Image 1 (tube, rainbow, N blue to C red):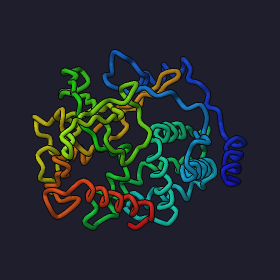
Image 2: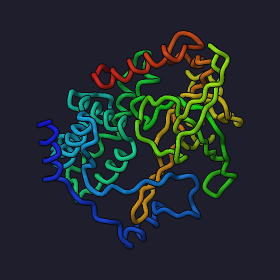
Image 3: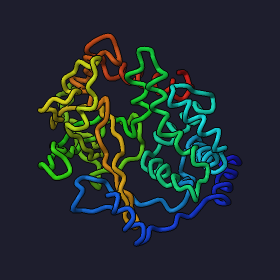
Length: 337
């Protein structure tokens, strides 16, 4: 409790109120197509802009509070020259105990609430508020460093687990295509799904005001069992799937097939990232997009693993898959790479 009081006292004394966006911001950001325009965009989710930095509150777990205080101190008071050296190390696949600590705290914050972490990292790009410019560049290169550094059998899954904003087990309710637009030569789909299990990203924006029902047969007594789950909306499209072509990937669902789609009624483990940040006067907007390794099918509680990323078999039961996932998560938190 004493530590919590000290952390909140530090935040109150050193926190910064963010100036609201102005007409000048609207004009400047519109030139770079970064100001929200309903005529130009499709499926972005809206989130209230942060009011102060760092964005901490008494409801956060202690490790997340420490994550923001640690990161805030680094961005405000870090040695710029040393930060640039660390960026170069990351780009070459090197790491240090300091960089592993940064990665650990970044994972804690992302796992708790990816929304405010993404907003925070965007706001802290302002050199007037955070003069240690090179330090803010450390975060985008953490995933790149993992890609270069991890050379064992986990190299296909450890970096995506770290990078993803959300990792969820879902059941698809419906999909809606955008039609062809001037923004893209391929269809963009919006999917609505029930969230059956949250593996990373505890806070997400739901599509519905209340949990949605899922009805299943109860095999024990032949009755009908109804459970309620929150739902989420996200996007996917061929132009992103095609980026993941790789000689090591055998599953045609992951290499840009023209008929790639998520099927209503089917279950998947999905990896989502927050992309395409846009502004208006009081909100931020993001596309919640399917990212590598995309959507892993689950059939009769068996995870489809034709690429053998997670096991040595084509199928692995979900409980075993989850144990493997948690082991990979622990590698990141322990700096075991």
